[in-house]
Image: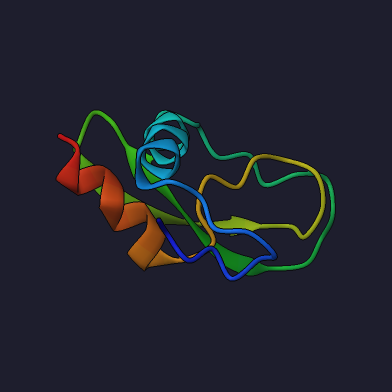
Length: 75
């Protein structure tokens, strides 16, 4: 089981499938004007990259670099 920090724990196999899907997501800053540092996995360069998220909407594949780096383990 993986401790998700939520009210329930998720089986490791489920977490890895969700995470693998997130590895293919392309980032989208959204329409708001805040500036939060977030991460995505570049499938061409095979590494995590940072992008600036506006704070609402858009697509945020990963909130932390550590979460993004799990994609590198699934190459």
